[in-house]
Length: 271
Image (cartoon, rainbow, N blue to C red; front, side, top):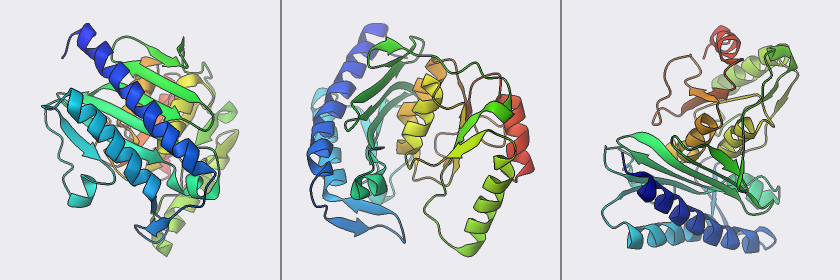
């Protein structure tokens, strides 16, 4: 693991990259978008690509020996293998559908793994000017102020976030909606805001008590936010209750008091 001085420098570099990319997102947010389809409902815009180019160029100049995994470039080539080397994992615009529709829950997500462990995290929503940051072992912050997960200990009083995902075959949708239908009776309410990274940050700052998602795009959706949740005192885990695997496209998070009950309900719904 890198020393504290190095980690602080990595964080500062990631924040700068996220804020510069955020300017591109902010300008594009109120303009007509050039939209392409990656799948039936999965979208990509010129802004996604421009932001990823900016972030990678910024970080590669500073850290030429580091590895890079990004949604729009590396993933398109199928190169998402995670090694022990310091690896920047980037979602240049999480919430592209929100971006296209002018719904303000969009963010830049940047995570750094060292020896496969998420170590530095930055999630920045440039429309709402909300910056979440964390370094492993040094706490989590929201716009520079320390944050903690909620202290809610009853699932029935909890606010839960999830997403439907981008796969639209009937079997997948039926499983998903049946699961949500069961969960609605176990929590206070359910939210679908359209950004996995921001859902996790919502758990980190106590806006949400729990979150889960299955079948999201890849490690770029969670690499940054996983550090932030853990450093805010939260738990990040596989929805089945097993250890979180950054490459599995499965994630759940909650405060420590809710984890066992949350996992039990998720297991009952087939996670």
